[in-house]
Length: 544
Image (tube, rainbow, N blue to C red; front, top):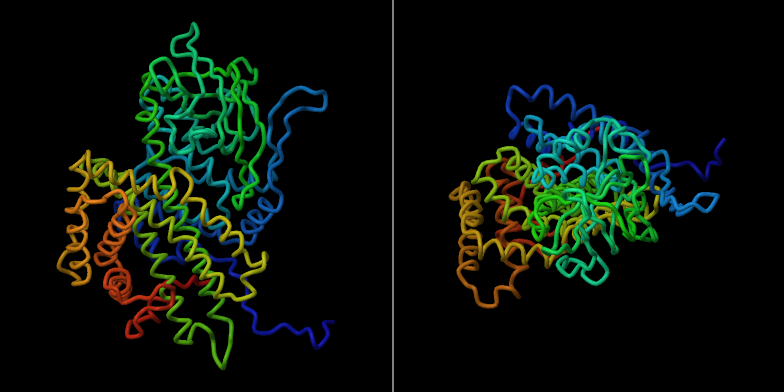
């Protein structure tokens, strides 16, 4: 029997046992907007099933265990043989297996495949984010492999399979395969053309031996990797399998695992190649062009992954405030807290809506949509991933001291939150990529302006922001130093355009007033008090 002094009151119940998908109107409405009516019933069913699993106590425990028991490197077996294996906690395999069986590596060949996959990725990442790395890279490797029809025919069925098999064996003997990627090196970082890994051709057609290192190689227990190396014709893309077809281990020496700020469940490694067998993907000297579609797809996953972290943190903040009493009433009913929660909800909904619009553009696969993606993906990747950390941090603060302890789950989200802004090119890389597209691909700007112009005339603050953006674009003086400012405006105008068209009026009004109209402070909780903040908060509440 508990002592009377230890009676627990005024503590919210855990946010568990709910459907992560159906409790998110911004997500469900986005799916219904972008998926053909004849597919909707099946898509709803699959996403709701995944949502119920993501919101279950079991999946949440898997996430805890996978992070409290990080991967371990075993370079040698007990006899001294080099094996270069990484051991994961069983929960990692359960999370990864559920992701694969739910089609999160299978977007390219299914109707509405990118929207349903992006929605599923957003749902399942809320259970645990670290295992999303190999899921994302496997999904994204398909367009790069398609530059070589023979390789695509061999590998694509394995990568899009919904069967997960752990362990190192020849890929031909497994029901499904996962892929990783190795681009960056110590001396180059984002400047991949400075890579020094060498590729020497051997007798077989398209076969090479690689010598060099990779400074960041995530998920080293994958079945294959796309890497960049210097061949005689210049920087080239290669496929490196972990296990060769005769069953022998390819030379893939894992030097160490990175000790990271967050992303603890995932193994990020440094690897050495020394006579490592590889197959060329695409032409010699065109490695960046070959792998760029993979990079674009993983950048979209950075947007989706950040939207997931934001959504989960905001859901936790609103849930806590709906049950926690202070100063004579529930926190959610206090005007100042309501302002904070509404502000956070706007950020989350804008991120989700933008992520699904980008996924829908992949599904459409028209010339116009491809041009739109050329600007919209790096702009969204820049802005949404940058907004993730302050959103999670403010959400954590809504729980006060309860949010600062590990048991709340918010510290794990906070440690994870900067990752997507760094991975696949940090902020400056994205901003410079936008400038490159503006200078070299005028059709991309036309497609972008056509997209945001669809909502012109619906909100005077959006109209003003579009006009200011056009003024920025017309002035090329000091453009590189202004690149971040320009890309930020592009992303906000795009989000505003989408919300004006598709979100409830109270959401669009609050977003345009604050993000585009200038009636906003420099911290969350500074929205105009005259807005319908209660409706914004209630829309974002996860119902258990």
